[in-house]
Image (tube, rainbow, N blue to C red; front, top):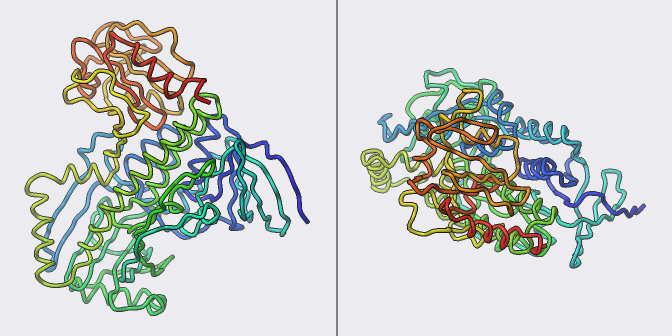
Length: 530
């Protein structure tokens, strides 16, 4: 039986993993009507992705859901990387990261999805389980899709836009006639979620790099640990037969001692693909997360990248649907996020190969490189990269430097807006800059100095004024410690920074001349851009 309907929702999201749920929640909070469907009848219970990085936690703070994640996960403050003979190669810590979340959060994917889905339900949106995406047709103003319900009933519905967040085997990507291009590495890997009785600190990752393979162990919620190891010379079918005893024997042979593991809840082999779709946008249809890029789990970047795809796309769709911005704004999703995914694959692929070396000479050279990184103090820079705080879009067409040469050492347009501590509120209490826009999806205009606020500012821009001295008010904050002024390299002439809903600097300029800011807003977000 076929059923035809015009959906009241503007956006259809296919796939209810972390990427799709984040997109749905971001859009729903912005007042956009969404439907989210998933072909599975129930949420997956496997832990899968298990690391949430600092930049993603900042996005969760902006969405107003951070407290649930911090309560559920395990804070991982560093890593202990050792070579054969248990010789320490590198012992980086994350405590110096310039963020309120200087750690990784160990939390299995099923918990991440449950938290996101619960907040999405609080916005009045329920995941439609057992609903499969079949095909779509596009016109100049809408996307008509065909869905199949769990009962077998067919539905035809129309949406303004469609987001495919349905994983590496994406039906949406297939309907777009796009393919993941790249390679599959020849080594088989095993992942297992277990409990361990050992002396390793519960707030650190552990990595063993030897000639016969590597072992990677990370703390999870519920007193469990994620164990990952490679099994060279074994087929996927052979690896599927491995149990905890065999995994323990492999670790003993490599590490020289047995790690006492017990109570496994998930053991699974996997292959590593390094693949990227040639595009993440085709007309009114977008793909995000694993639907558009897949890669090694080294560094725990996959789920985080998908969530950040969702955040980037959601505010742009919301802006266009609310009448601010047009095709140029939507085209920037491809430029910014596809470019980010390409750089990530270029970095993670070689890192995986370096970890999977076997000859004595190559292993020794790798270990020297790792030690050298620590000796010359590059550990902090690597931590910032892994934590994804350095993701930027400086080449994007929708970010702009208003006054070149005025901001020596300042964060650039296209980069993450720095946080700052010690801002005094009207009540006299101190607050943190990023916390000022918690739960607020508007653009934030930071004005340092005595500039006059332009009357032409659109309603989606919130003004925050920051002074070194004086009286605080509802939108005025006093930076007596000077942290915000230092973070944004504010000189005597003042400065203004326009911060996008994804925490990226959209525009920077001097406070004494707001005309270029107004032009920037009109060019990229003006109503005539619909």
